[in-house]
Image 1 (cartoon, rainbow, N blue to C red):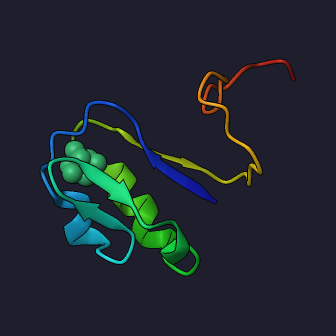
Image 2: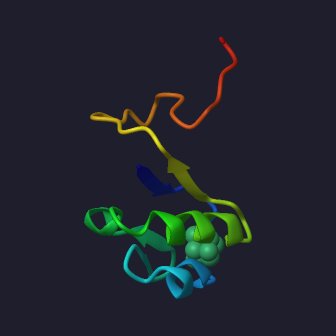
Image 3: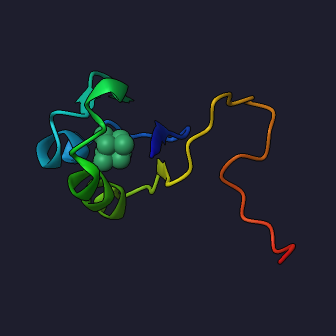
Length: 78
Ligand code: SF4
């Protein structure tokens, strides 16, 4: 699982309240990646509750993430 915060976080701290092991909020939220394993349910809950929907969760494991890539965009080539 990969988790990251997209632009637009309003620093409301809700994700940190739901899953403080993974989300740390200063002015905006950041992700403590090493704590992701074992907290998947709380992460999914936080992502669902984020008022501006900027917590992005991917079930896939990417070895490399290129910020210019369309990671997170669902294409319908199936
Ligand atoms: S819940 Fe969303 S908007 Fe609020 S601090 Fe977390 S990432 Fe930012």
